[in-house]
Amino acid sequence: MDTKSERLHDACELAVQTFRKLDHKDFHEIIAKLEFCIGSFNFDKNPSGLVEYGHKALAMLKEIKKKQPRKISKEVIAALEDSLT
Image (tube, rainbow, N blue to C red):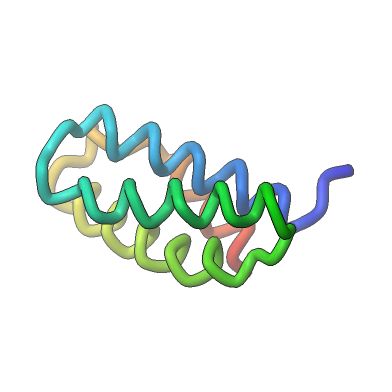
């Protein structure tokens, strides 16, 4: 079952992995928030937190990509954009 919420869940997990690879203290908060929302979604299947922090992660990743294009893959941005629209 590949619902939009499940795709958003997977996109947020991909965003967490991307932020971890960047390995910078500025991303600890967004990683923690995304991980909390992923866990919450796994428990209750309510995607509201994923939507909120998915948008925040997408905005952050787009900003990083502007400054450091090779650090952020098109796939992670496309996955978030696709699952948030």
